[in-house]
Amino acid sequence: MTGRTVLAVVPARGGSKGVPAKNLAPVGGVPLVARAVRACLGARHVTDVVVSTDDPAIAGTARAAGAEAVHRPAGLSGDTATSESAVLHAMDAFEALHARPVDAVLLVQCTSPFLTAADVDGVAAQVLEHGADTALTVAPSHGFLWRREADGHGVNHDKAHRPRRQEREPEYLETGAVYGMDARGFRTHRHRFFGRTALVVTDPARTLEIDDPHDLARARALAPLLDEPVTPTAADVDAVVLDFDGTQTDDRVLVDSEGRELVAVHRGDGLGVAALRRAGLRLLILSTETNPVVAARARKLAVPVLHGVDRKDLALKQWCDDHAIDPQRVLFVGNDVNDLPCFGLVGWPVAVADAHAPVRAAARAVTTTPGGAGAVREIAAWLLGPTLRHTPAT
Image (tube, rainbow, N blue to C red; front, side, top):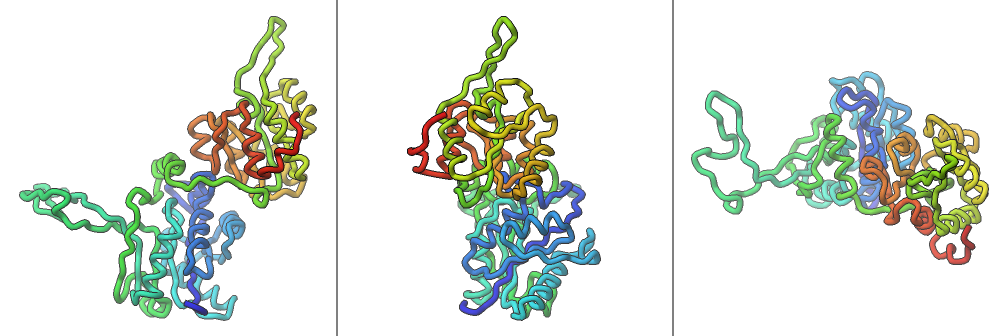
């Protein structure tokens, strides 16, 4: 394997009719194209990862995730263009730029959100180490297939004979996630299947292709169950932006006879904020509420505040621009659906434990602590660890 180039190509054009901007749609808080790139980078056989795209936003997201981006010409970006043509173009561009030949090439689809590095590695290994000309990921199936005709016709079974599951050899469903090809053979045949084809069996529970909004909704619902739990470290984040109600409070408001509103906050959160401030991270409290209690708490914490804003995402983007902060290195903490636009803007969308279900589904990480009960303190511990022991509460 030493000295061999294994190029993973992720085709990700900007146009999508079924799901607008599909390849940038977040699942588990991470854009689909970035999920595919990370799976490729985690595969030990892959030496280089390229995203083929006609869209500047996709290219930027790909680079932020650690891939190279190759501009795909208009002639290869339409609805009738094949994935093979995009892969061949990406191979040519890569070899021209790096002056080294590709030995094996992988076609990796970012519309398979639960692709793993092990899946990618398994396909590459079949081509590199086991003599296959081509390989692909498949999922075992014992399903009975039918064709609608005048008389219903069994495709993979005799309808008069229904063997038990344990009596049937499984068949294998093409998952659409990863295809691997010997590069020289691929250039000759210009198709992903030629010569001897190896099947790499994957977990059927992770098999999902996103073609329409319903698929995307399913993927987001499944992400908390299928994704490995992940929390950021200080190396991942330059700024922490905090919602107020429901994040720093328990989302309840006490109103006295004069109409004044009171909320409860957690001293542990004050300790966490102080530690983050001392560590040099930029901090901001961002709220749609104009309640004076928000500004009062911000003064107590010595944290800048933007409140009474209608569009939190626009305010957050402007704040990042004003302070030259890359949104991909921002951790935003929220709890309700009005926080979702901010989730789509930042690299680390975080939900508190008792956030609404759509918010938890869209988050990249979820605290174990509810809002107002020390969730901010928990996030500070993710980033700073034991240094919190030496920081006074606020």
